[in-house]
Image (tube, rainbow, N blue to C red):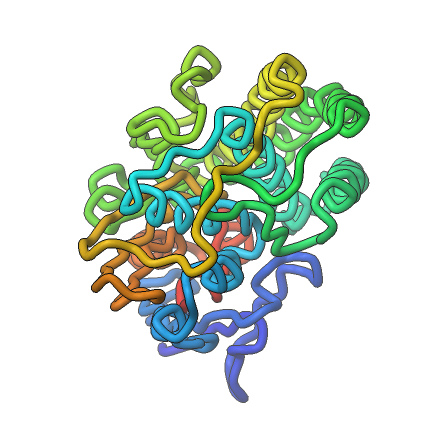
Length: 375
């Protein structure tokens, strides 16, 4: 029997709807899953994406390098700073420019706050009735963190604080204190969240397993890959900004079974690790108070001829920019490496053998954004 499942705005007439709730990012854009089903188990699956294609890679070539920051933060809107940072690092590499130390620490702080917000967005949308109270608590904490970041950057989304040569705004000591207080409150709740989620998701053990070899071959990254035993994290494999000074905080994950609970647990690991990173980052910023936050760049920014690829660990996984310059004010060509594209490629084989009834929970454990896959 053939059956097509539709999420969000991509759902067509006749599709079987999958509703992950108003707060899940699938409500923006979406995807369709064409399945062959036998006895309510999926025997084959094909993912259909591309419903939000904006041609953003072509738009980069029509903007100058500073204007490109606006485009770089749009594909992964759950953690826009990662896209901004990859783009800025690519330009700085071709220019031979190194951002000031204080600016690099601020970049790390903003990116890690974005990572917490992204993880809590997906965790709070897990469709499990027995854990709704802690998911409500996650939403409350997420709003507090989002409000704090908004006060610091001036924008709730698409902060555009990261720029070529550094950052556009500094962080005051009072702002650092507020960040520390908000994250301390969240840190006190994570053990309880882990306990409740582990109990409520027990029945999904060994369901929706992503094989390590398939994850590697599909280009999966982020928590999708780490939950399957791939220890790839660009922050440790190729440290950028100030991550080289934070290596002691990174520990191998113990959740490597590749199933639904492992991915959910890995999302919570992201929150806990980011809180630790921000705590140490805040200490460094207090010591570096008064230092510059940006290098001066020419009013008309031109890059030398050449090409560069820079990769960062975005909120959804590996996020990279391949930039080609012919010496002008705009890229000759620019290509994005987005995490959701590879992660959705790994989803197809994982669906085979899955019970149809477990499809919503599998998708909830598989963070993706349509704009990030479709670009």
